[in-house]
Image (cartoon, rainbow, N blue to C red; front, side):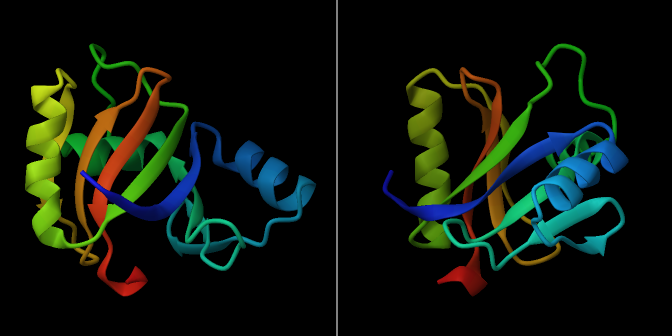
Length: 136
């Protein structure tokens, strides 16, 4: 697997108002809300996307339900690593499985056009192995 770039990073939030107060009001990061509760900044230097992602939305996108499964540690943050093409995602997931990593979500094309597979890092980050067409 060859990572092309970090597509995005941000905290996974449990209290949206407290998160907005800290990141936007406190640290001064301008945030837009393209979907209810999902706050993002796609122009912050150093990362292609920075977003506050509610845990319920991360669970829905990963497991198809707004409830995070009790048998999977809840992540503190998310990180998306973009590969060079959509055709690289499935082999990357196979490689991760062969190394013994638990893949939480097989490659799926999201409604917004990004292809994503997900797993948890040893540190508890929700890691996406992705291809985001508009970022290439």
